[in-house]
Image (cartoon, rainbow, N blue to C red; front, side, top):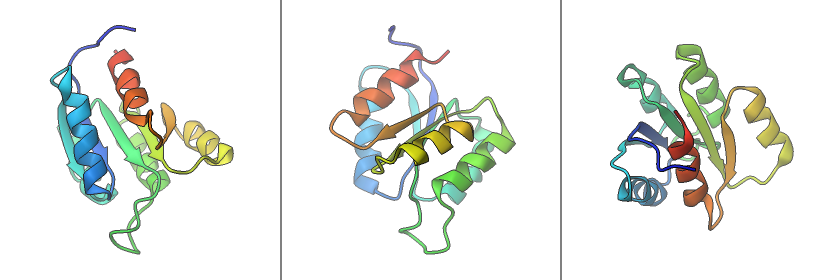
Length: 128
């Protein structure tokens, strides 16, 4: 798989350390333009920036109990623009959840493990 070309990427996760680490990882080899968001709602307000890819945490309700979860945000992203690639990132290793996210329009479902950043990077760099 090639190294791809720079893309506009949104990372949506309430874990600030993870988002900054993933942002660093994604900009190390290819100068992707990466924006980070703690909530899905904040991401939705910036969709007019036309990201190529949104890396979206499945669970987003730790900042606020009323915050939308990843599935709700995925639905809104796809409603706004079905061409935006969405990669769900989660600590859940539940097959049903993974299948449900793909059926709802996510490109991929990646479990947060030691290889997660590499998997996300390869997926993004392989997109046209």
